[in-house]
Structures are given as structure tokens and as C-alpha cells.
Length: 129
Image (cartoon, rainbow, N blue to C red; front, top):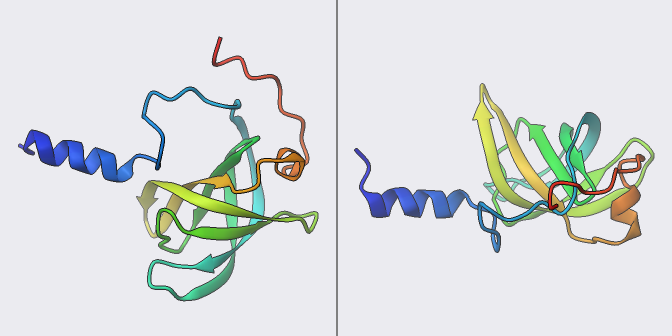
């Protein structure tokens, strides 16, 4: 059995910075995926540029899957198929399975470039009503 204070510490370590687990979503997630390019530094501070799969697309970011270990809090560059590039912060590691890690990313710039990055129009947010 895990001591209560250790379980709370582990949960806090995996919680996105500045957000509670019960925080309301800013935008709806879309059950779509997109191929993207990702570049930055991995957990060992080694520079990388590689393809990745973006899932759970939303107006403010996505989940990205790649065969690289990243550091929560670091910033990477995401490139879409139209050639647009945006900086994104790694806010949480969501999963790691068979060498593929999944991370939640949030665009650093939350302006119009971020809202149009995926090339789709997101429906109005209904999860906060």
C-alpha cells in the first residue's frame, strides 16, 4: 500500500502546472489526429527533430505521441502539414506504452495563430455550461 502523502506527491508531480484536476476545459477536444513534426530537446537535453502524431486536438493544444522522452515544462516546436510552426509547452505526460510516450501540449501563443493551427474550426465550448 502506498502511503497517503506519497500518493498525493505522485499525483501532484503528474498534474499540469498551475491547473487542478477538476479545472474546466477551455475548449472541446476533437477526436481527430494529425501528423506533425516536433523539435526541441529531450529529457537528456539532446536536440531532436522527428515526426509525431497529434491526437485529441483542441484550440489550445493536443496530445502528442512520439518515441522520445520529454521533460514536463519544456518547450518544443510543433510543425503542421501546411508549414506553420508554433511553440508548445509540455504540460503533462499522459502515457508511456511500448516505447511510445504521450504528452499533453499547450500552445505558448494563444492568439489567432494557435486557433487556426490545426486548420479546422472548433465548435463552441459546451463542457463549461
